[in-house]
Structures are given as structure tokens and as C-alpha cells.
Image 1 (cartoon, rainbow, N blue to C red):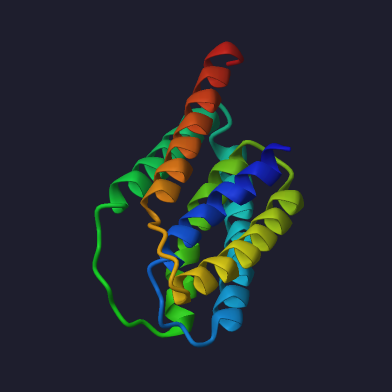
Image 2: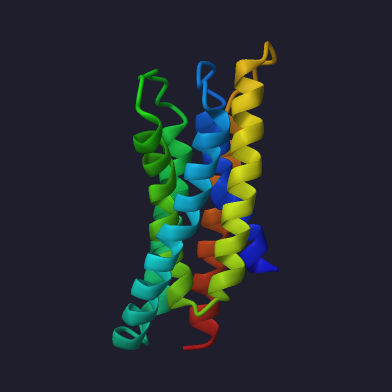
Length: 170
């Protein structure tokens, strides 16, 4: 269940970003690219996280919680950035998906179910990014800041929970 919820959480920052893009003509392609990258980066991140786990077994929960906390904080702080820039679809999808790499390193270090998280992240990202791009094109205006805050707070909460578990179970 934690993997499915986390897949949703990593998709929320894409929603926040894509709600700010009303002029995307190829919404389906951008959503598909972003979903694929939200699955590829976790594969790399999980592999790296598992490798790091073998090397840093005693420190992995602490490092994982620090990484998740930093990512959550970055999401919250990025809500203040309001610049509008025209970016090619592939670059936009890549940029929107990079955070899943660092999040998945943390999950690889925690030995979570890799494929469940990857499929969850991909599906949530595709569905939510397509809906976000459609809503951004419509006259209905929703600001992405609350979603960034929600995703950031959720990642910080997971990081604190992970840290507390590492104290209880050294």
C-alpha cells in the first residue's frame, strides 16, 4: 500500500507543474513520456538504492529519510517559482520526472516493492498529468501550489516516519 500511495505522491508534483501549462498541444504524448520516465528513473534509482544499501547498511534509513525530507522541502519551496518558459515536450517530461530518481533511491534503500511502486508511479503520473494538462487548457484555473505542498508534506512525513523507524530498529 505504501508503494501505491508513494506513486501517487510523486505524480502530484507533475500535476502542479502541468496545471501551469495551458498551451500544450500534444497532451497525450507529454503525459505518456512523463509516465514512462516516472517508471524508468525509479528502476535506476531502485538499483542504485539497493547498491547503496549493501554498502551503507547501517546508515540507509537515515540517508533515505534525509533524501525524502530534502525532496519534500524542495517541492514546498518550489511553489514560489512562477516563471513561464516554453520547453520542448521531451525536456519538460524529463525535468518533471527527475525527482522520481532520487525518491526511488530512498525506496531502494528501504527495500520496498520495486515493481509495485514503478507501475503505480507510471499509472498515476499518466492519468493525473493528462487530466492536469486538460484542465490547464480549459477555462477552469487551478493553482498547483497546494498540490506541491501536499506532495512535499507527504514526503517529509514519510522521511520522519523512516527516521523514527531507524531509531527504533537500529
